[in-house]
Image (cartoon, rainbow, N blue to C red; front, side, top):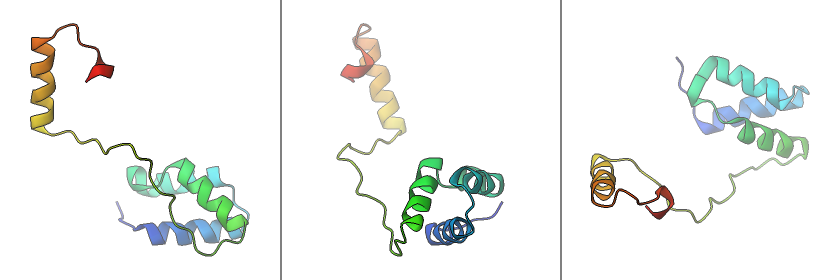
Length: 94
């Protein structure tokens, strides 16, 4: 499997968009070659749209204010303890 960075993905999407290839096809091609490393369809479609609009410089939009979640052994153990101590707790409350 190959490895590629974001700028190379953008370049590929720009070239394929210039050739009037649809975003779905571009995404399928990237997934075929890069599997999970490929950008999501949503990102491919957004970048393709921006390139259709002749935007040369594209930057990802700012992320929402939602906190980043991370699964660690400590987090998992803490959730298990909460579940053991409070068996009726709802996932939304965690």
